[in-house]
Every structure is written in C-alpha cells, then in structure tokens.
Length: 199
View 1 (tube, rainbow, N blue to C red):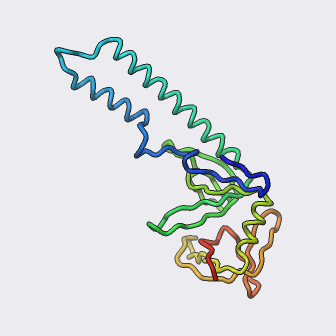
View 2: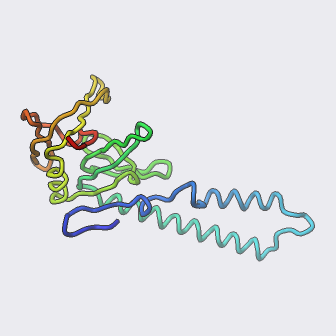
View 3: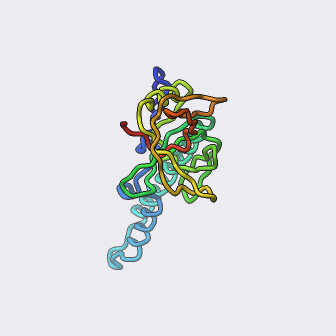
C-alpha cells in the first residue's frame, strides 16, 4: 500500500493485495500437479526420492509464502478500520460502481478478505482503490462539487432499484459522516452515491 503524506490519501493497488488466480500457481494447483505427476510417472523410470523430496520442499515453501501473504493481506485490511475507503466494484459487467464507506470491521471467507463498511455493505479488499483520512476525504468531496452524482434509489427492502442524477453544489462532514449537498439543498449521504461524473 502506497501512502501519500501530502494528500492524506492511500492508494491500494490490486497487485499488492491480491494474487491473480489466472496467472499465478497457487498451493492447491501445485499439489494437484504433483499428484498428477505421481499418477502418470513412467513405471520404468519413476520419480527419484531426491526429486520427490525437492518438490515437497518447494510445496512447503509455497505454502509458507502463501500463509505470509494472507497474514499481510489481513493486516493491511485491519489497518483500514476506522478509515473511509473508495472501492470500485462491477455488479454490472463493464460498468463500475463506486462504493464509499467507513471500515467498521474485516472478515475472511473462502480465502477472500472483505471489509465491512458502515451501513452493512461489504466489499472485497482487492476492490479498494483508495483509503482516505479526513484530509483525503475532504479533497475527494471537494472534487465532486459542480459534478453530477448518480444517487441510488432504494426499494422497501433496501435494494437499489434505480439511479437519479443530482448536481453537487457543496458537501458537509457531520461527526465524520460525509454528505453531498445538491443545488436545491438536499443532503445525500456519500454511501448512497453510485458514481460521480462531469455535468
């Protein structure tokens, strides 16, 4: 995680948080490869003891590296508790959704680390693009003034059913909670904003 002390903004690169399952050999794949190799080895020229021990040592080293990586990932996520984050998720293919929120907790499930945001929303740690302290949050809010915010419209169950456009005229921070203020004076919680674009 690279932290800029001048802006108060931390940027989390997905390459520093996650490993691509498509391009990297994980411990499960390595073990499957080893088992397959043992199943289909030439009976007249079997795998030697030294080769087998060397591959097991590689597997053990790989597993230890993976465990260190997981601890580091969890530590990075835990360090975000109490900070505002901006995540970019793709609930609709090809259309990013910005998710803002203050990190309340961290959980892991199925090898994936999730950040629990205020309001109950969860995002994958790998989807976080920016972590904001108060100065960084103010800078982010100031950058939205004069732009159009796509604001979520919820149904009775709390599901997003549509979006509405709002011209951002100002912002406010109330007890650490960020709001956008529309041209007609409406206060909109930042967590309800889907995306912000040019007017």
